[in-house]
Length: 252
Image (tube, rainbow, N blue to C red; front, side, top):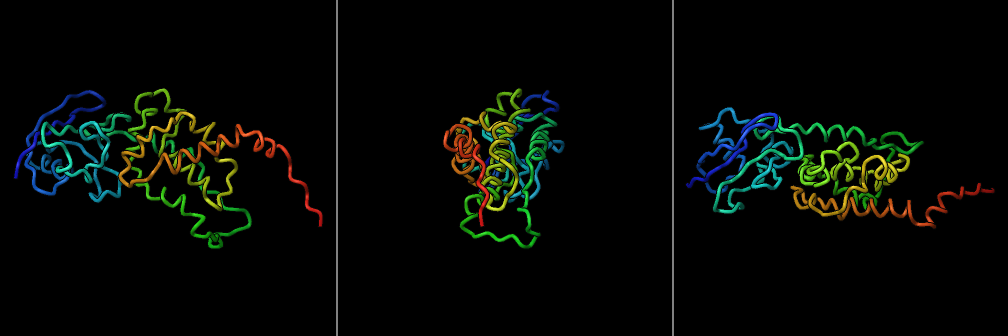
């Protein structure tokens, strides 16, 4: 058994300061274990969100030594052995209290993305898809909505003025998933991604991919393909010409 120094942001509504604690550390423990021990022994009023403690609910998102992480999936043994462990709330969203932030921005953006539109003429239960048709978008269904990608995206994190026009990587990935869906019949997801959800703001730094606890390749498999589709539709002269020419009626 050893001890480590923890420096944790304490405060509410953006006002506060760091408080230092020394906490016992046992082999195999994760940061959330230490936060719980701290609550039990020294700081019972410390506010932190958590639920499953298994890396599947996304509740315990915070920043550990400046990097967005899940507290329940960050092993103490993986952190630098020297210096304090610094815990702060997600920087991109308003502070509520201590390590808890108001992530309502993300739910507002989720409501702005139109849901799956079934193909006309098919009732629920009649949908048929081949596995090879859904493999590309199936990866994106692993998202646990921890919003670490939203937090680390510099378009959201460093520029508050971008938030009204930019959905962020999690919801651009959702648009890409729907655009790749073999049965989605919604009109022009690509145009909506560019004109309504701010796809053009993304400059593919891959920071969102680097912090994803589910190892989803957000940039390579969702955002870049969506950007390519938008570019083809908007700037390729042959695609543009094809979109202007109506289909000739079939003659039986």
